[in-house]
Length: 271
Image (cartoon, rainbow, N blue to C red):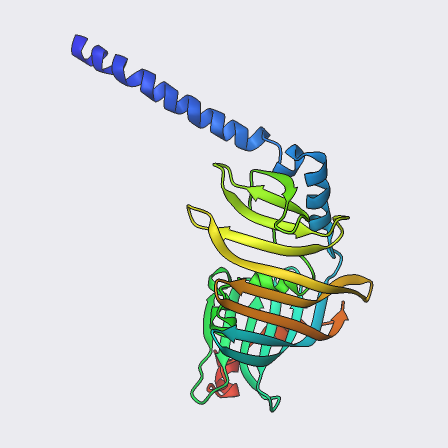
């Protein structure tokens, strides 16, 4: 009996300590203010600008061209897109003849990829697992593209933030993770009106994943839309130029549904 009491005497302090830690952590999760509530005034102003930028835009569609540079090769592809916020998008990559080469669609839960080459088959994936690496060589998340087309900046989870000077002296919002390390930076113009460049970091060591730049903002349908969006990752680069843009068009939900052309219509209806 004495031996049992002795064992409990050794175990209980550690157990109590663990319980206390869990209670404190859970309590903090409940009562801890959101990160933006702890920001210095200038950082809060920049964060608020990002959060509210073009947030009333409910849908958009457009036509543009993306130029992709891989080493010494440059490829140009025309793109058509439809976006319906918060989570629906369709992209069509067009050949010079105007014929679709590749379709990508997001329906809010899944992504559908359909190559229009001979024997191309419809592929269905989880939405969060799809990026544009196969199209532009840079693994930009497909749902991030949807927000970039609206002039918005997807904001990663962060713990604290500060305004610092960017490489060219412009104000830069630096978002840091819970255990330190930068997860995202956003450079602005001097008035903190337009985001000009956003860099995402990944991995334990917070290495640069990719950078996105925004140029030539124009008012379109009452919204401030960048007409040139650039993507870089190491030696890879792509530039997307918007030629035509429609803000808040009516887009039926069935426009985001892709079907397998190899399956006869009667089979689709009966499945």
